[in-house]
View 1 (cartoon, rainbow, N blue to C red):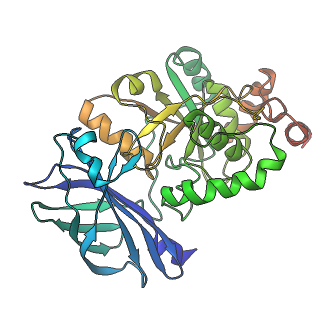
View 2 (view 1 turned 90 degrees about the vertical axis):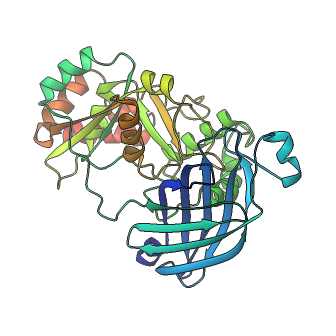
Length: 369
């Protein structure tokens, strides 16, 4: 795991240039056999310009300085997630241009990646960062007692969704918390393999070309323990509180509940149902509860994202747009017993949220032990 972490990660930042379209730059690498493979992307801010990516391989690991001359560049449409051949460029981006190759210069220094690029007509540079091993949690916006949270939840849930965590950890999907970062490899290799393994147990055919069906399949496997690029949320602040308190982290003095202004976020930013060959995004999705009997009692919804550090991305847009979308509420973990007792009176237990034997046994264990 340590070797994989050393050579894996998502580095994200801005590409700067006087001659090329500025925009987001992203590098995603998976550590494999002492080295790393993955991709580098450039997503122009100019919607008339195509996005490009390059395949990367570092057989001996990423530390230090690396130069890649005449690296092939591939074009794609970031809003459609479509990779297309060069002969279709005039059709898809009539006013766009993209080089065939680029000279790439990378320098990895800890969690920072400094890069330069040069093509026949353009050049630029930038600095990208990945989430550090011990990235500290963002400070809370409010400290509340349990009763203060009950009052808050009863009056501030219009347009908001909620997520409960057993400690004030940063927002990251289960996929991004792993050492894996290359979502193309995940989408093209992992998901078909998982589906083949589960097909004999499923009553429904999940169409991989349908974004809603793909989201439903992600939700199903995530609820059964497989990492995905989904981040689970709920429309109920009290369901979120249950997830925060039920397995409170004994090493943390507080549990954390996130309140997210979904309505404002959806109004201000495009929502994208793709995770590959598309620009950085954090998008709310409502997927059908196909073969997933936990979604309805949990009042579940989800966000789909290709961002490792979700809070960094949200904070960036909060700064740019001068708005506040995400609120972090910390409640003392010592109030666990009182909170769970009141939630039980509301009918919020493991038995109600996790239909089946597992949920019932968890609910009875919490009550009797």
